[in-house]
Length: 138
Image (spheres, one colour):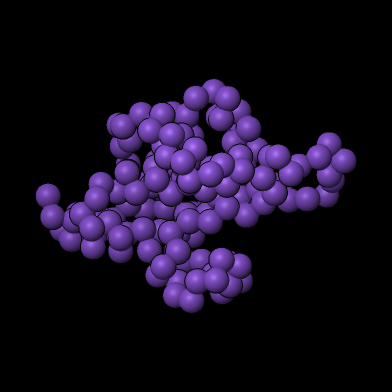
């Protein structure tokens, strides 16, 4: 079906999809991700865009904010939990422009941002994404 004729997923749909991605990961990744907050926002803030040197709010679909696991210490205190943000409107735009399944887009972004939490390389992130179940429903 043509992506323009489908109703875009809501923030609640995306939250369920993101959680399904996390739930589909191998246990050794699921458990540490339980401490990461997943947020669905319409767009990134100017501060978030500046933090990754992106000018247009349409060009950022997801962002990890926090300290990767390998850099955390038992002496850390008073820090906010790490956050994975998904930006709904840029993801909807990408979905409409590419025709890629929306669940696949969400999976890709969640896994990529989760990979930052683990300090993974791009190759390791691809391996992690391949380990996720293919069936994610909105």
